[in-house]
Amino acid sequence: MSTTLIRGAQVLGGEARDVLIDGGLVAAVGTGLAADGAEVYEAAGQILLPGLVDLHTHLREPGREDSETVLTGTRAAALGGFTAVHAMANTFPVADTAGVVEQVWRLGRESGYCDVQPVGAVTVGLAGKQLAELGAMADSAAGVRVFSDDGKCVDDAVIMRRALEYVKAFDGVIAQHAQEPRLTEGAQMNEGVVSGELGLRGWPAVAEESVIARDVLLAAHVGSRVHVCHLSTAGSVEIVRWAKSKGWDVTAEVTPHHLLLTDELVRTYDPVYKVNPPLRTEADVLALREALADGTIDCVATDHAPHPHEDKDCEWAAAAMGMVGLETALSVVQHTMVDTGLLDWAGVADRMSFRPAAIGRLAGHGRPIAAGEPANLTLVDPAYRGVVNPAGFASRSRNTPYEGRELPGRVTATFLRGTATVRDGKLV
Ligand SMILES: [Zn+2]
Image (tube, rainbow, N blue to C red; front, side):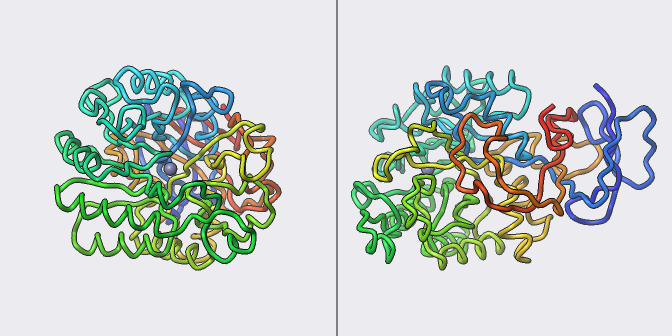
């Protein structure tokens, strides 16, 4: 393995430092470090972050390789600055057994672009009726710690309680897709002024908030850990803030698109804006940004949801829900949080690496940039300005809501255990 010197990068946005990488580890952090034989990255003006960690990625393999594979998804992740992603369980077959999670975990290892940590299903077949083999998935080679029926809500309170109790044995966490099913039957977009004007079936905020309220109470009751997926409303923020004030073990994530986009975009009837949970209002967006800044929301998670062209290029009601997000996440966070003064780069490192790695109990990721630590690193040029062009995506799918939009920042290099997966903004 070669030696690499990153010269003059602002570590976590602080003072310029040289960072020497050797044998997959950070060997030294300092000034004027010697580069004998090392490959040198001149990084003046660039920000060095710990490799980003995504708690919520849909890689679609096995079963929907027409929209994404572990290989194409991890290539997209590397371009986005990620060194670890959690792969959601709603594949075909569902990741509800040790066999399936080990298959996904192995495919990630083989890709070499980004570590893939499988998420196990909470219930068999995501059907919400019977607990999946949580213990067997935890004990498998994949070492699953995050369990989710994402795409579906664990709406049965008894099943949710049992799952929360069960994962305590191995320090697991239940990541809930909070969507009360009866309140969202046939729902097409956020319930509010715009849905009323467009005549589309609304998806009320209370459908999310009622489930979160129940789950934080259940988690407190059994003394377990719950994580809220893609929190999207101002009311949800208030519930999580309250639960944390009680000292309960509750964490939450927000997606980049919920930090930027609103339901006003649905007026275009362009299905690229159709997503679950739906885009909300400007007031929700501002509350989410504030909550991410003050730490009520722990982390950013992409909910990268690739769909083939034919599932999005149709009328609104028939279109699939979801957006790709791995390759634009950091730019959207810079635009909404850093350039607005809400979060500094150390804060970005916390919300996109340290905290998600801690929630997922991932060893080797979300570590400080210091001698002896694994060299999982991301180098960002914050001064870059570019227009999003999905034709250049590594993802197999193109369903981005940002096509043609100018966004700041670019990942210029990503290192996975010291090996560059991205160099000069391109896959190695
Ligand atoms: Zn979800």
